[in-house]
Each structure stands twice: as structure tokens, then as C-alpha cells.
Length: 89
Image: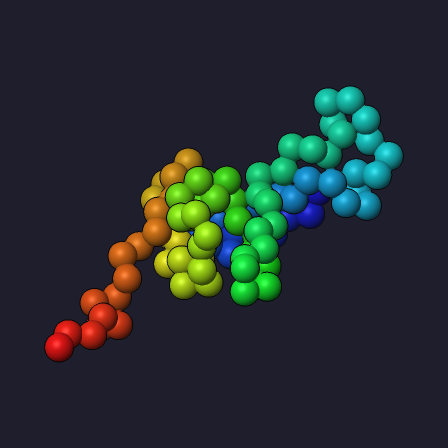
């Protein structure tokens, strides 16, 4: 498994499978990754850890991914949108 970082919160993650696990079997078959690649409708790909994947909304946008942050070892959250980005009449 190749070590990487989550695109949302930055925690270290591993991706299951790949060439490194081509000839492993049984308990060490390389299927125990801690992240998954998510392709958004806009065609962008984002590597997300499972805590981040749990909190992104249905049909996430790149802005949702950018607002992901780590709460603790097991939890992430989508931070509220910046108040400066909202327009008031």
C-alpha cells in the first residue's frame, strides 16, 4: 500500500491494492486501505479518508472537499462556508 494524505483533512492514508500488493494473499491481501478515490461530477478526483468520506454531502462539490477538516483521530467535519463569501443585499 502506498502512503498518501487525505485531500480533505490531510491525515495520512493508505490506498488498498496496487502493484505493491499484486502477489499477496490471505490476511495481507492489500485490501485494508484507509482511503478511497472519489470522482466528483465535475470530473475531479479526490483521495478521501473514511472519516471525511462519511461527512461529505451527497453529490459533493470541490468546495465541500476544500472545507473538510480533521476533528480528531476518528472524525472529520465539513467546516461552515466563510461568511465573507456570502452576499448580503
